[in-house]
Amino acid sequence: MIQIQAALFWAYAIGATFALSAGRQLQVWERINAGEGPRTRSRAANPYLALTALFAAVLMVPTGLFLLWQNPAWSTMHVADGHDGVWAGFVLFYAGGIPVAAIVGFLVAQGLVLVGAGYWAYLQCVGGYFLLFGTLIHGWDGTGYRRFLSPRAGDFADWPEDSVVNHLLDFLTSGTFLALLLFGAAVIGTMLATEIGWLMEGWSLPGADEDRKVPRLLAVAIAGAGVYGLPFAGALLADGLVRLVGGWLGLPLFAVVAGVTLLHGRSPVRWLYGLVGVPGRHWRAGIDDPGDQERGVRADRPV
Image: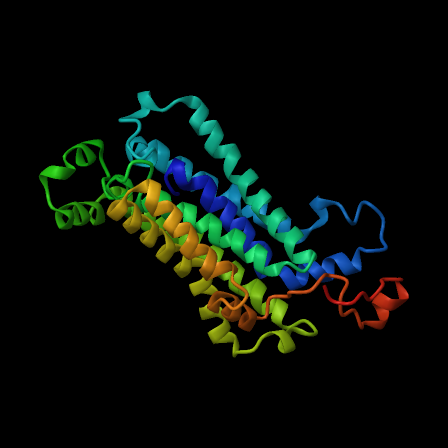
């Protein structure tokens, strides 16, 4: 349900966020299957991965294809003016690329969670959403927000001749915006319900209360701000720096700010991440269930 140029970034970010939300369950899944046969350890047997792929294929792909058919100009960020300008390969790329990107995002974040690098799994979410918001706000030529707020090809061409307020009102009263509202309620609503539900499910597992430092409602709010709010703010900052001092200087400046904000050992983002209660240890660490011990799973020290 998003424009083609930003769709894969969104799908990757959703896949990574799903894996991070179910991080504790994924670790339990690995512990249970540690001594089992190859069939139970197959990727297809992972219910969280299967649900992620199902979400992308059943909700993201059909809604995106509907908007591409209804309004090809808006869906291609006005690269195409109509159906004749849409190459069939774009449709194939969209329909096949969305589930693949979601699965790749999930597997990358899952791999990081299982080796005890949960914060780096979180950075996958931040990176994906930053690229999504950056595409919609700045785009490739500084007109991303204009392309997003122009429901028809003529609106984008006439942008300099009218005010931003009038363009915004025109977009809010368009059929494209109505379709986004309806599909957004289904896609984004299901996405948020899944992420929050998996977080809640993980917090009910042994050891979660020790890792989560704040009440559940506050933890959900912190997680939402970190996954969605921070990348959006970063995209606005990057756009502002590029417009102010140019891309050659603005992007390196933004990279320095982002690196200090996200990677420094005493970063406030790292501190807030530690409050949420997403596991930060290797999946073999802290095994104290007698059933796991009987299955021969070794309790390694945290890494």
